[in-house]
Amino acid sequence: MKYAIITGTSRGLGESIAKYLLESGIHVIGIARTDSTELANYAKSNNVTFTHFTCDLSNVVEIENTFEKIKNEVFTDNLTTLYLVNNAAVLDPIDPSMIIKSNDLAYHMQVNSIAPMVLTNLFLKESTETEVTMIGVTITSGAAERPIYGWSAYCSSKASINRYTETVALEQEELKTGNKVIAFSPGIMDTEMQEKIRSTSKQSFIDVNTFIAYKKDNKLKGTDAVAGILVDILNDEGSIENGKIYNVSDYF
Ligand SMILES: NC(=O)c1ccc[n+]([C@@H]2O[C@H](COP(=O)([O-])OP(=O)(O)OC[C@H]3O[C@@H](n4cnc5c(N)ncnc54)[C@H](OP(=O)(O)O)[C@@H]3O)[C@@H](O)[C@H]2O)c1
Image (cartoon, rainbow, N blue to C red; front, top):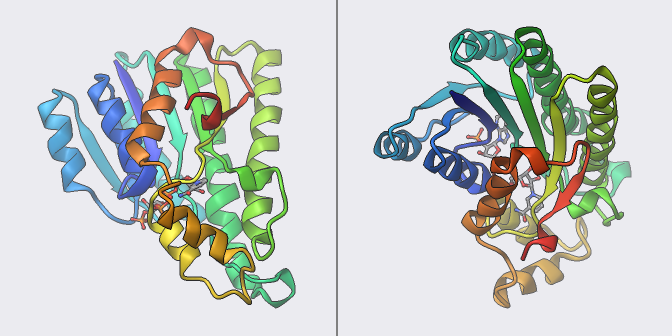
């Protein structure tokens, strides 16, 4: 039996990834602050299960409590493979770094960097101890690889994901656990995150007009198409390259 734990299943890319994994016959656990009745119905029609856990990923104690609950549900004798998809993230605060409020920065780093690291660490330990193969993927961004005016928090949190992925993969190879961790850069997609970018002022984000044009010129990809590519990568388990930062542009 295979389980996938996905963060940010209430909308956008996370919801699409959940749908494709459910279609592949994999049970899905969703973590977000909002439940999804659509995914529960979708699971039923595919003869698998979707279970939602409400958790605010900005709070480490909530993450650890949620992990304990999921662990008891998922790690049974029948479990063969566990997927962890760290998809949830935020873009705010968008502003030149010197005017960003410290609390807003701490919230951002907690959701985008600490939460995926904590979840990956906890599930890797449990999978290794119970001899279940784990495939972990964290959604990264092109912003990890280049500076963008007003996005110091987002560029930094996504860059940390890339280096974390490479480091943990190196450890898992050395320890010969059989577990793999990768990152996946999805390109620009038509989601609420992009709506938020387009509504930013030019003082906060000088490239805002470029992003308004992406939408106008139909340059944003649909989340289903992007999720399909990621799920194809995950379903071809033997070919997954440990530590690789996969980029959707290599597949479109
Ligand atoms: N959209 C793009 O163009 C783009 C480009 C490159 C990379 N990405 C990356 O792709 C991933 C998905 O982005 P998206 O565009 O689908 O985002 P989105 O539409 O804004 O959805 C974000 C998801 O994250 C969850 N989330 C946010 N804060 C949370 C918190 N504190 N606790 C728990 N869950 C939280 C939300 O659920 P709740 O609000 O219900 O909690 C929601 O399900 C992200 O990692 C993003 O950085 C996006």
